[in-house]
Image (spheres, rainbow, N blue to C red):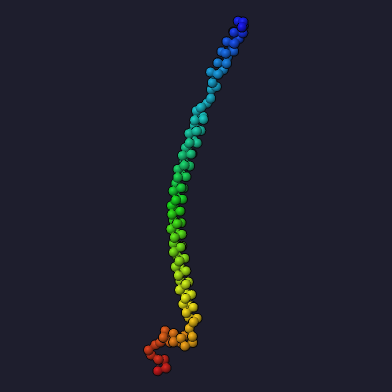
Amino acid sequence: MNRFSVILLCITTLCIFYILQKQPEIDIKKYETEINILQQKINLLEDKNDSLQQESIELEKIIAAYDERIKNLNREVNVIKRETKAKLDSIDKFGDDELERFFSDRYYTKTDSIN
């Protein structure tokens, strides 16, 4: 290699090194303030999310309690329906004599209205 090539190689190397070492100046302060504002918003939203999740858990517990109450009421309604059906079925089986005796026993008064 001749001297000219070596000098050219050294100059090129120095230029590349200078270009790589030189960093463009960026206004970081503006971005830092934007990041801080966004972080505050994120924190607020996370707090709201936590409170909504807690409220959701409480509402699920209330719903579960209502579901249990509804099940109990449905059981009671079914029992009443069965008892009513049994009573209606027993009345349907009464003959004329039995119906007459039923009403006379039920509405019997000691004082006779004829007397």
